[in-house]
Image (cartoon, rainbow, N blue to C red):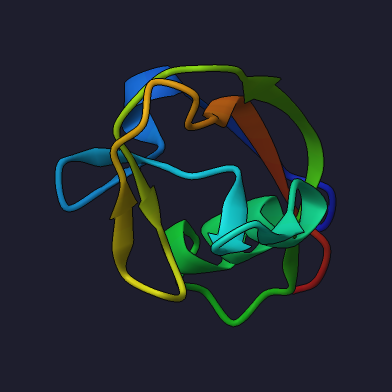
Length: 90
């Protein structure tokens, strides 16, 4: 499966009913770090997996901050428009 890719969009990038926040911790480890953890979370295989492409969705409101398990409830909370995950190993 080397090089296999899958893209997740908008509401499919969700945890506990909330879209996943742009950051792993409150205001920290944003973008690539959060996208990589998402890919590892949804692709429960023995293969290595990483985010190869993603886009920020600005001001979407309620989001779930994955590592701190907090909900960002301000109208300025950002999430992901899409995340493309690639399997990089067997």
